[in-house]
Length: 387
Image (cartoon, rainbow, N blue to C red):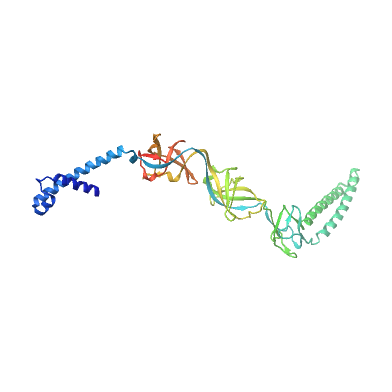
């Protein structure tokens, strides 16, 4: 602006510098009101004319000076990429082999044969109840069974020879079979006084004390856990059901341990919970190092969509107009030798987003180059240089 004022002042001096015209100073000092007004009008017209000429000069300079025409931008060339989209859910860890042992018959806890933290094998004796006279009853029933068996054998021989009545034969047979079944049942009752491990694992907690009076199905004795095989479970909203199936890849984050596990879904529930409109999924986990514990909270990311040949663009390179339409600036080659391009405003259809990148469903092709750096400094159809 200062240069323009100086130029205008110089031009006014040139125009008014002839000896037959008064200078501006002379007019201000000696001129009448009319002369001052005329001189002002003349200068305003001159300024307006010079401003128009200056605009024409600037336009001509912009057209002829190559260095002024091009903004510098950075760009990326698009290629097909493998794309996986994950949805995240809260879940927890469980194990099917986490059991509290209860007695099947009433009685006193006679002895505990294990200690907490001890490893045991399936079928190992872990506790023993007093039999309450069951063994004596069993021995008595065995004697009765022996007698009944002998009686039945004799009656059968007689009956085979058509000696004796049929009713005697049937009574002997019934007595024998009844006692035989009774002995079998008593054997089961006696066996229940010895509590054995239902699977191999670790004695996690001894709950009852020796001498305690135990009530079947009510008094807990021992907790046994096997952590070698765990599972992560989660309740998934039913809207995800079409995209979640068995063997789909998942990522499991265990925040308290700071670890990530990659696995596949091992089971998908077939029941929709009417209370929360969700279904259950399970992921089997190997836990031979025993770091995972039951009821730990986990975050489960399920791969609900995959595209092995997706076109991905960083989210920061996606712009939006007032209508909510998404677009990018695509570069079109103008002069390969000069590395110059024309900016083309290109509307796109967006897909799913993951890792700060969005899938482009329509509008771009592999090999297209889009502006990445300097995106806020350019406009449609502008010529730029790619750096």
